[in-house]
Image 1 (spheres, one colour):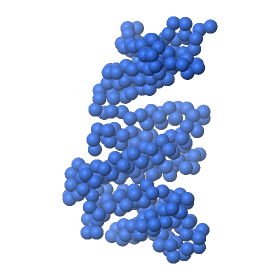
Image 2 (image 1 turned 90 degrees about the vertical axis):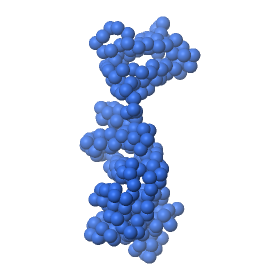
Image 3 (image 1 turned 45 degrees about the vertical axis):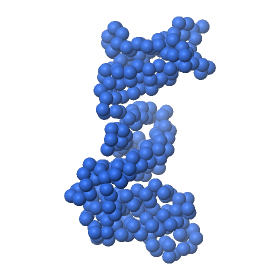
Image 4 (image 1 turned 120 degrees about the horizontal axis):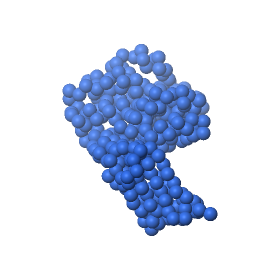
Length: 306
């Protein structure tokens, strides 16, 4: 993966791990666990595709156990949606094509399970216009096909669909984009925000994990805006950073005519931030951590002094 893909994949990995380690925080949100499982499945595809992108399809040892589990997970999601649709129109032929449970799929031989999942994938894709109303989507069938292809490479199935380096790279970018836009931004972020009042610590750490850190950089950055309570941009607002527990100024700047501020190349450390403007109340933040490659974004609202 290139640096951008690696940084984004690491963010997905960190977010997934944080959520997996703190399931009690989201246990009351029924839809959260399936969304997390889908995000973890996409990360597995990213990691397995990266093995191919870094080498060749020959001699690559893929995790067939994890791939089989991911493949059947996605296949069951597709199958259940098609079963619900088929039942609604009393189409027993279609229902029979996809009528598999997790137990049935687990009992299939390793050379058979991919073919069954392929049948489910094709039936779902052919009925997507209606099946998507029952809980599946085109990204599911796309991910399922990718998983089937990877699983077939892993077990050296002669009917495998070949995935070459360039194809793997393009699929990685697509899956990362889907994981961020559809699962994180579209679902998990929104559900976590419902806990802002009841569990602010979890919410804060979740969105900390969601920040994309550029591992290729060694310094941090502060970027943001300053306005008055009426949202009018404030010019020449002084922004001062001091290393926590020290009095000397480490970094400083002033906002431009648009109220924007930017301090690049901040060495990793904990800082106190002071935001001031004559005739306005000063804003201070203490013990703010700047890590390598981390960019902090802020929106400061300065209230006039009566």
